[in-house]
Image (cartoon, rainbow, N blue to C red; front, side, top):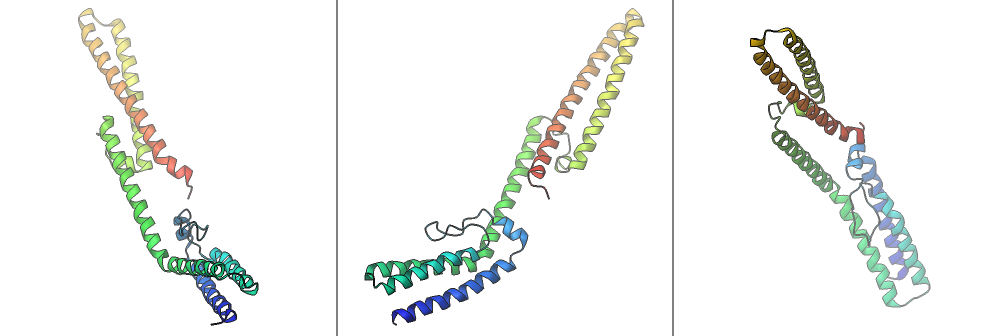
Length: 220
């Protein structure tokens, strides 16, 4: 095979590969592009390309072939030309392999995200148990509407307990001496209940912030 045939063959292969890459990129759904947007698809020495799309890899390959064509025209040394041919071949192979493995990368990324979600859910559940508020149902912790409902419920409880404390303190001022100890104990008990209710309210508010933070960072 003479040099002209070699260059012609490489250009034909590049043309076919370009068509394959364009078809590949057109078939990608927006969700797939987003899923692979930060994934390195190649060895950095071959292509400075990441993400799902592969058609941007055609341009550097075309420049390589043009460079080889110029080297052949200038009749540069065999070793220089061989290095260029090897580089072109390595890039061709890498791009063909990437075209065939996109679905594998998508599956791997989906599994990674699923694993992250599972670890996050487990961490959240452990945080609930460690917090001392395990009596709040775990399903409530996974739903923002239920979290707000739980928060409103505790705020209402806190209001009612506060009103009860005011009533007891008013009764204490005018009650018979024999009833004071009982009323004082009742007031103390109500303050303890109010304290626990306020702690639970603060805890639920923190859960709401943690629950909504990922959605604020990545709006849908």
